Length: 141
Image (cartoon, rainbow, N blue to C red; front, side, top):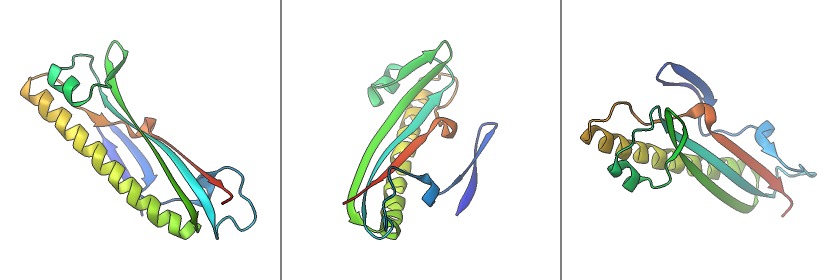
């Protein structure tokens, strides 16, 4: 399934919860799609376009980083690993993992925006899909 996700004025196109063979990194050995070990490193970036952040927001996410005079981000970094599965099985497991990560990211964003609104600070937290990263590697079992 494909979708165009819109945030503010920036649309970002991606395949939702789907993996393509071209996204798999590492040494693709003979018959790797039948049985392999997979590992994933995923980064999701939450961003607000200001450096004015309330104490409530800092309590919710103590890992807020200020990267410029007008941007604060939260780096959500996840590792995931599974062994001895086919590529088809891995794609199903990946979709479940990504749904959970997406849910966690949205819940954190909603909590941050709720705290932000309570303190009447301008701006909103959002997921900066353009800065998100994922690296999926295949290895022999």
